[in-house]
Amino acid sequence: MLKIRSTTPPPGGAALGASPPPRKRDESGLTTLEWLLIVAAVAGLAALAVVLVQNVVSDTSEQIEGSSARTTAAEVAAASIVADAGLDDGGDQYDTWANWVRYFDEKCRRIEITYGDIPGLDVDSAWARPTNKAATDMPSAAELNGANAAAATATKAQAKCEIIG
Image: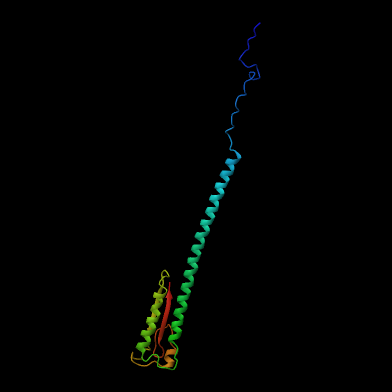
């Protein structure tokens, strides 16, 4: 008697000799490697952002500090010029009031050239002989020593070199 085998699998099982059906991959989640790659990419972007922000902050602070230091240096130079103008060394350094005015006015105005890289820098330069003296008169020690930023009077000269801005 010949037995016929059925190709239909029995209930609850596979046909004899047949391989099990392939498992379906669960596509609802990511594998560990995929998560690792995502985390590494996010960490790399975060590190790049931190480096960029640090560079911008560093550059900005250097510019601010440098500008502030240069402005202070210009102010010190201006004060030094005024102090020098009020000194009388006992010699004939300034033989006339006209030479005194010209020398210190030019020296003060050179600050704008020296510190021209400072944004908005302006120099207020005002030099004048005493009101009762002629441009060709020789300065006296008392008149030189009394020089200050206030307007010239009969007894003192005006010596003003100030940084604006």
